[in-house]
Structure formats: C-alpha cells, structure tokens
Length: 259
Image: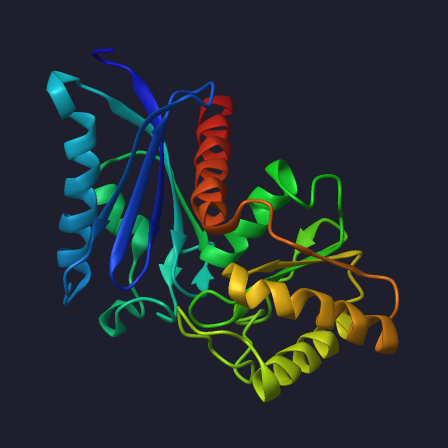
C-alpha cells in the first residue's frame, strides 16, 4: 500500500486521542487510541497530534499521505476559523486552540473541525439513528452534558457558536447510576429544550446505566409537555464523534478535488 492516500479522522478529549484512517472508499486501514499527556500550548498539541498521524502514515514501512483531515473537538468551535473557542472536555490550556492552522503546519491538506457532539449528530444523520431526519436533537451525557440540533436539515450553531450548552443538566460520573433528583432534573431540563426546538427525534448518547432510566422518563415528560418527538438511544454511541470527523474529512476532500 506504499503511497496510498487516506482520509484522517481525529477525536480528542482532555486525556485521550483517537485516530482513524480510511481509504477513499471508506475501508478502515488504521484505528488507534492513545492517552494524552498534559499539553501546555498550541505547539505541544500540534506536535503530539501531528506526530501520531505521521506515525500511522509510516507504520511498517508504509508511506501513506492524507487527502483531508476531520477533527471532533472537545468544545464549541468557530467552524470558519477552525478554532476551539472553549475547552469543555479538554485541557484548560486548549481554549482558543487554532486547530486547523496548527495541523496544517504539520500536514498541509484540507482540515475541517467540529464539536464532538456536532460530529456525532452528523454521523447519526448519515449512518445512524437519524437517517432521513431533518429535525433532530442529540444529547450526550458522557462527560459534560451538551447537545446539538438540526432544524430543517441545518445545524443550530448560535450567534457565538455556543448553541447546545446544558450548564444546568447534572454531570454524570462513570460507574454511577442516574436516579432520584438528578434523573428528574435532567429529564425536566431536556424536555424544556425539546419543547423549544420541536424536533422529530431526540437521540440520547449515554452509558447504558444512565440511558436506561433517562430515555423512558424523558419520553414520558415530553409526551406531557410537547407531544410528538420520539426519544431513542444513540445508534453509534462512543464511536459517533469519530465517524462524524471522518464524514467531515470526506466532505472537504471531495470539495478540494472539485475545486
């Protein structure tokens, strides 16, 4: 496979990095996860992530090159500049991180970036639970609770790209169960958001011990206050953001070829 060109998907949080390489037809040629150390600034982040991509390119003597890179980032982003505006599930030093510029200093190909939750919703729309749905809300309860919404087939970004923040929804710790007041609070707050947006579908991405009590209760509350939307579990789960990043990479690669 010497000289093969691939699409690159990147997903990162405060302490982990996932990379996936596929050929242009979508066949996976590499899929890796690494722990991330403390990275104090933009240069340190760029050398860590760029270096990991280069390592996959050169594995076992192969000499791959990138067609495009898609990134799922841990917080709201400016999709035009490609900056991480605020590091929500990432390291504090990354707020303001110029993701696109930094990666392109290492690998000069088209780069697209989105929030992790927005990338997950993109993947659910094209490959998962929301296929064919124009109005959908995805809520993730992994880490800091956040949401992403499609209305009329377009993502709601907000005036400052902060749409989807859920500061009052309880944050759930791994290994715990969602019950009692936290369960009722989460269902009530999410039902208010659903009533405001009126989606056809509400997708909940959470650990099974959190999703199992939340989904039926949220469905009951929504039926009482804003009947219509159906509440279901994510079809892609933890893999959603990385799959969405790959869709971003495929899109910008196609646009680059077309231009």
